[in-house]
Amino acid sequence: MPLKLIPPRKGKTSYWSVRGTYLGVYVDRSTKAPSRAIAAKSLKLWKEEIEEGTFAKPGEPTFLDAAVNYVAETGNERFVQPVVDHFGAKRLSEVDQQAIDQAAVKLYPEGTPQTRNRQVHTVVSAILKHAGIDGKLKRPKGWRGKKRTDWLKPDQAFRVFKAARRIDPEFEIFLVTLCYTGMRLSECLTMMVDQVELAENFAYVRESKNDDPRGVFLPPVVVAALKHHPRGLKRRGEKVFRFTKCGRLYALMKKAKTATGADVAFLTFHVFCHTYATWMRRYGGLDTTGLIATGRWRDEASVRRYEHVIASEESQKAVLLPVPKIGGRRNTLRKAS
Image (cartoon, rainbow, N blue to C red; front, side, top):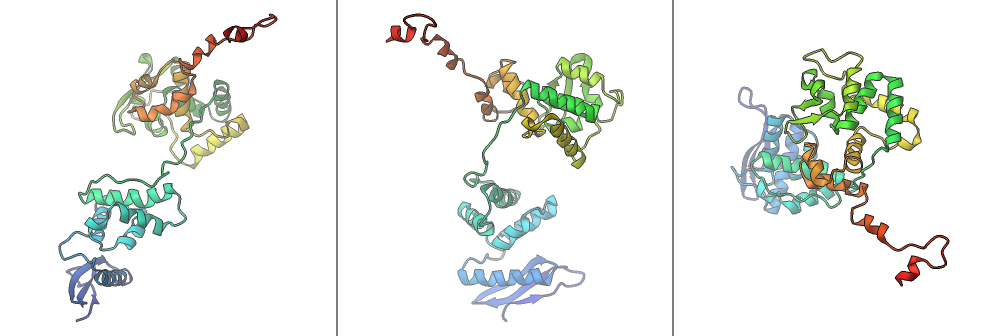
């Protein structure tokens, strides 16, 4: 009997299946699809795999099976369908580095390395790990893009604060807190009143990006700002700031930038993190190890990007170099020669 689609059986399964023989290969398998149109794609794909000799044997795990289980247990369907359409019922053992790289190029021929990484490599890696395959996957060359490390100069930051105050006093306090603590946007937005101890210059972050709780030092400028919070800090069980990560919050930032001037056009909420690190290096005297010790970063790779914001101790030896004598007949350059 040639391969054909078998409709769902009431009370037994809601999925279409494929049954029959093609080129000597017997198939009796569920497509895991409630739609006939999607099931027909599986039938077509399996016929092609049989012709190519890549059809998975019964009981052997396939990418389709792994993807179905991944979506069912995590609920995450983002970017999954295109990779499922590409790999289909291919054996998991065949979804290797080369196959993933080729899939990324085929699915997104005009895509940037960042796009291919986000929509193919990351998705496939998550599905494979969920299936128990935890191999190291190389990402597309250039997937990190060009990292920029913009930061605010003190006068720029002060003008941003002033502009924010005119728009919304609480928004100014929010920006001051970001700038002088290095907290991530999500950490500051979810910080609870119960986590703040102004008398001790302390705030507690229960969950950071690294999944580690950490203590945050509140410098005097932040303590002073929080003491003037329009709604006060006596509301136990509530958030310190009323803002949420939504369009209104970014609209406030846009207004503050416009009111400040064109020289802060690069400003984003994350720039305050860069500003904190830069100021801690330039004015606080911290080196790479010191920045890690603040608890804001976990490893050296994350903080090396701030090494260029100050002139190194070695480069400052330039003050010892010979220079011309002003008003003299001879100069130190001639003496040095």
